[in-house]
Image (cartoon, rainbow, N blue to C red):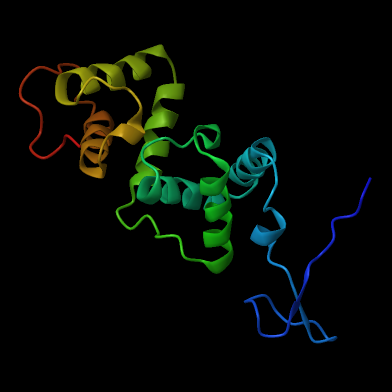
Length: 167
């Protein structure tokens, strides 16, 4: 198989560290320019599986730049390349509101069994906008659900929704 060639850039022309010979190795993101979409998608998925912080960064990047979809197949090559550039330069806005762990907590609750999954769906139908993807809701809504779940207060889901819970 052909070797991956590292582009050589003049010293000072990039942000990568200089080698002893006075050249700068090309960035990881620049090495992926021209890669097929499937290769880029595989890189994102691999990152999500192998690096919890990378997964959080992908979600944060999607939320701030692309929308609510977190499936890398949804995005084009330029979006995926920009993600790797932002990762490389550490310019991804962090999840300062803590939504990512709340989404994960709700997904974990749903995996416990059909009854827990139904509690989430009933809560979404009663207090949300009827969509069951936790990423479609704001952190306040997710927090309200997890608190109600932990208190065992999800037996009856009638009544008005908590204030400010819809996104």
